[in-house]
Image (cartoon, rainbow, N blue to C red; front, side, top):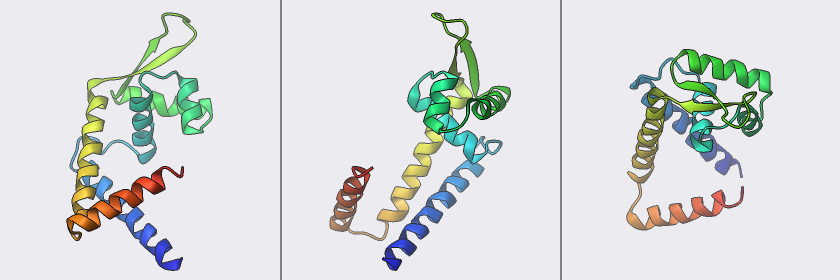
Length: 138
């Protein structure tokens, strides 16, 4: 079990390193990991409300409001009043924010290349199936 734990820790560190490298090569150096995660969730949810985002991030609404306000100020998001209920605002991603998904894709591609570089086709297929199996356990 210790070997598995060490391997998982190594892979986790490698992922963080690759993401950090991709971020440093991009225009998103001004974003914290929490802000990047917030943007990832907003992109996935497509125009969520603050309440929906807060629930998804498992953070308090005041904490999410501060986080979102910083992203608005940096030009990544816009708050748009709901047409159905003016008390509610939806979070819309600006063009600058849309490009974050491309950055994440570059990070995923680098990780794929790093991991598969030392594997043959059969090993890559086995690893892929094992990771799919693990992912379904969540």
